[in-house]
Length: 489
Ligand code: CTP
Image: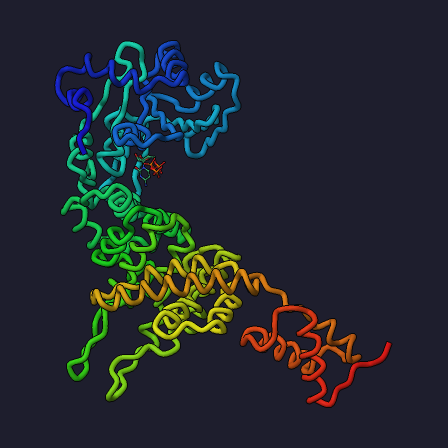
């Protein structure tokens, strides 16, 4: 990444030239208002944190954090009066918030934290801008821009955050042991930023994460999962997951995934490392979709492999039934990670359950009935399932890879064909359970189920067409074999 030269100059003495450029960046009228109020109330005010970082990264941001030397709440109230906007005040935290147009502006007073030798609990008191910058998580998040007219647009970068942005480095302003101990979620944040931005994590920070990993358990599951989802949504999530694994955090926050790691060898035969395979599948799918839940399906598709692993004499390693077992694990994992237990979970579960089906089809001859069954079972999820299966082809054997991919294309063509002909997706059988009950004057029960099933099977196997007439005749025959006759109305 090459940062603009004018901006780099800010680090040196030529602040004046640079402030012109920064002023151009702060063109939104809100900054003028913030500046006017700061001067009127004789308050030092700065834009700080993610907004400034993203300015340099050319990632437009709608969240503006403002820090003032003094009371953030009083300043926010003055800004609110000027803009004629409601101010939400959080007295306990000493913060206030304004929503203005599409922006969200958060105000806080600069703070300083000091520690007594007999307690880990910090004393929080009013501080200078630099005190405040020092207690932030990373140097790239501690950049501040002056809002007061006299120095409007000047960058304050006491910890060389700009240089770290240029060198793509995640580094803490303080000793990382202190920064992470203050808020252990920052260990996840370091890894999340590394994945989102493709940055390196400073060695000392990585060492501190390894040393303090256990403290992650004092952070709420929701906040941890929030960061994990941001890692999953980043362009190459494997960057983040490798860090999570190497630092030992993954074992604590998501042990089932960490257990995918490793290769066992029996009688000279090994199997693939399912952790790295899963990461490859995840990265593969990310090239084609931004959907968080499809990405989760990639993470979980082989989650039951460790639990189903067997070495079979004369055959080698097997993972029989890992798709069923994996699907059964999904609700437990979602509950454990505080992910939503709704239709998103069901979607992931369905994909885990069905993930082998298209691969099997692609290896064998693709019959109409197999395709019809796949369409019936996958329904609306068929495209997502095909995408997952495509991503699952990670073999390094080019011959196999080409063969699978080619067969996949065949499966796709057949799917389209069968779908057009038989409309199996979203399919409701032409004869309902109620139709069967009325025709034979039956109560709800086993016999109705048997007939219904037989009709569905006959359609899926292609024995009869997917229409009412053929299904009706089939139903009469089926019922006759069971000793049932239609009642005359
Ligand atoms: N911050 C911190 N420690 C945390 C969380 C936040 O020091 N655990 C500081 C950082 O200076 C950060 C700012 O608060 O830049 C705002 O935090 P937040 O809005 O959570 O994150 P952003 O850095 O803005 O990034 P994103 O919006 O991607 O979460």
